[in-house]
Length: 562
Ligand code: SF4
Image 1 (cartoon, helix red, strand yellow):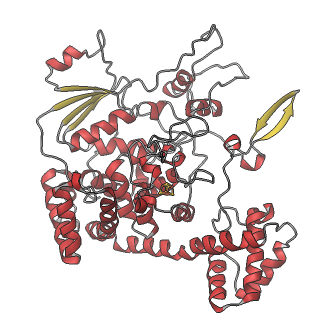
Image 2 (cartoon, helix red, strand yellow; image 1 turned 90 degrees about the horizontal axis):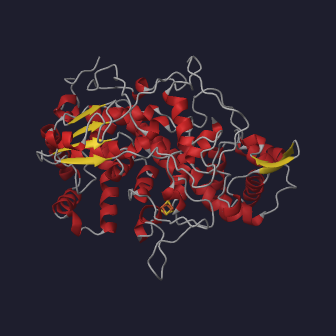
Image 3 (tube, helix red, strand yellow; image 1 turned 180 degrees about the vertical axis):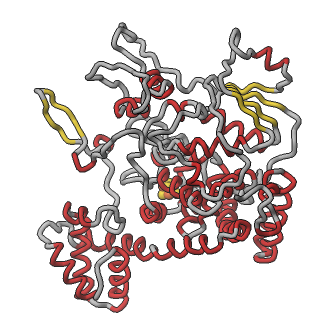
């Protein structure tokens, strides 16, 4: 069983990584290794750290991308996972021919030369290709062979491959045959009025829209119905990205601006395209992950979004809406981000690496290490996404944090400081998982669309810190368990109010709260906080069907699915 004294590489132990002194030593060890490997880069990093506000954005991006692979090497040695990191690099680079073939052969040639492939016999074309290949057709064999044929000028082979690629990309049978793959999936034009591929149907005299049956996902209980993209699919997105930071056009991060006025543009629905609210360095993350630097990509996300376990796929997509691709499918950034998180969590000591890079991040030129103790104490009211993210940043800025939440927070049931080798051991079956009370709206307001085990990771990131304490079941305000005067009397220097995200939007219409009308957020809370959602629970929640759900946001979708 690993303990805090378990030795790591570079002469460190897990206990060393928990405190600021150990992290300062770790940073020195990293800088020494960097100086030996690339003295110029070492000098650039020190200069950037000395005057971070003078560093132009483009220069910072280049610095981050140059540092990423060095971080991979150092952290891999620290945790003894060099083989696993090398395997990830190999796996990444092995897919490169597919990304290149898709862009240069399928998109630029096949679908243009044969825009109507409906008359092609895919089975016959495949058999002919396999005969020429001398092995089964996979995306990789197709990409490799067609590249060879192009280099050799094999006109017959190229034409055969072009026709097959057109069939696989443009026909329904072709798409069916390559379901789950990426080579024959090209971006489509976006029609803002038809973002969801619905079909019209009539039942009992009522005309309605519904998703075609092939898109249905069976739902039983609270297990995930969407596991997100696999590595190849996520890398496909990162290679589809054009890494706009090099031209300072990464609107996913900085927002899509009008060239003339400089103001943010609006989507056809009037949504301001301000990009990621955290200014996450998305383009740099994609560039690093695409070259195999998994930890570099992870650390790049962590600069602006250390609580990334609570963001990404199925949670947010402001970045994606502001992607430079406005007329065709945008890059699926949330999927890419979550896939990097999963890559890291899948490594031995993956959670420890995550936890470490939230406290020490050499790619962050502004705050590579937690700042010294400020002597300030902050009370955070509410442990939802705003509360837990603020708690993290305040602690890294050197403050002491006490957080309270109105919900009862269940004990973890294990020592949070115990090093965790396999992150998977933290995950519970989502069907049986007991609500832990931590995470506010992320816990009680979300159902099957997201893996709530991630909340436990976030909680552990905070609960391990010496400067953090949290208490559940405490209401704040006049007449509640704790008032503002109580907080001042206790010696807090600041109070941060981070509650209220779950408050329902009461629509100002006559009969808005008539019998039979229920607020969706209140319904979701009742469903989950009472345990009524659990098959084995005796708590009940009665509803009369059918129900009309008004709204199209995440709360409405969660309510409709329940
Ligand atoms: S995600 Fe879109 S906007 Fe962002 S860097 Fe990639 S292509 Fe550019």
